[in-house]
Image 1 (cartoon, rainbow, N blue to C red):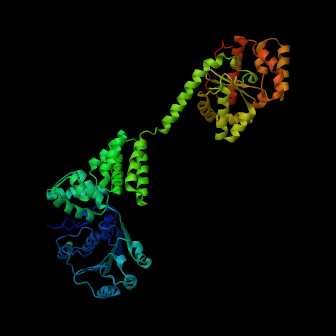
Image 2 (cartoon, protein in one colour):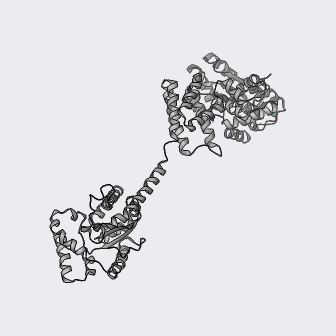
Image 3 (cartoon, rainbow, N blue to C red):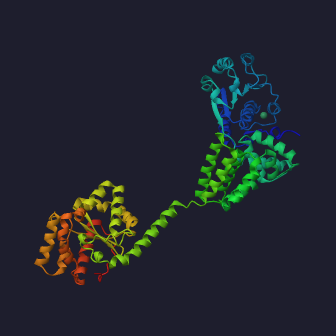
Length: 559
Ligand SMILES: [Zn+2]
């Protein structure tokens, strides 16, 4: 039986497998007769270099004229196909690498072709030539007679001297894709009338590593080994690799996550090569990843790939193979237990929201939160709220997040914004912002809302605008409030007057002696009428401050 690689050697560019770009550029060169005098074909073994060189030579010599579609019937084509054309001279540089071999060859270039229009030299494995041989060839490559064509083929073009590379047209043959090889194997087997499983052909193609010739040699072997009925299990057996079903079983056991099963499986795999198991797992996962219905999420694939790549590195550095396998499979098992980071964030956020909502009624009952208009009265009682984050803590966190995001904005907030409280999902602030600061807050309104959502679980604001010309010191503020109360007993005037010039005012020990009197002011009930007026004013000021954020109606009967 003739070897399949020889029997199915491509006869023309259309039959060349997986090298479409090269086939079409060589065809164009032939059809337009724009021909160089020296070509270099480089690429993996069995990727079609020598076949292409022979097709190209035949096309140059066809008696019907130079064409990408040689006639195949003229004497020249027939002789070329049979490998006995006198003007196609092949030299295997692996076995004829000396300067004498090249001298013999250059000697032949002196004589005109026997029958064709060109004399074509195909030098295979050109990188094997000795340096002297290369130099001898170089002279002829530089100024060849017009009837001479050179085609050099090599698997390692970097080993050729630059002087040769620069005198040749370089065509780079890529490894043939698994898909193309499998397709070609199917074509051959159906022609030969041999039964096969497609999985078996995939294993063979992968074992051939992009070389069609190697794969066809394996196929020859497989046809004999399997008695012309090629199954995946038998091919895995022949190549000494794991059956694809076994790889699926490994993945299933890992996914089920029973430690004893994983250990038992590793004991069972004891006789197989660990590197091969890891490689088979990777290619199996790759196959699953590109399939229309991937078995795992992208996250799991990514984690598996990392773990397996790590395992390969460990095995390459000579680590204990069985131990690497243990670590690898148990780490893969853990992949299913690590939650998605997005889910963690979502859960944390929703639990924060829940906490905030649960806190609300309690904090509303505490007298310190009864009014949200005076920042100096809004210090939450630390003993009562030690377990849960107080609204002041939340604001602290909010301010921290603003600083993290944009230091300037943080400074701006610290300077002109005072936290009044957080109630019913509404963040109450007092603002002494000047035009510039307001503009900045408007610009970053989206960010501010986003960070408020992260720290308070709400992005609804109520902002009270305080005129910039208020007295600055704490004592002055208190005096101002007191005098306002004395001058006008109507409590509805109070909220518009009270203010803290900066957030640190609360910490000023000098203010403590006046605290009692301010407390008295705050517990004076505010009329519903006054609140709604305030509400209206706040809405207007909020618009000036931040543009037009959404407003939630505040409860009017809160005390
Ligand atoms: Zn012909």
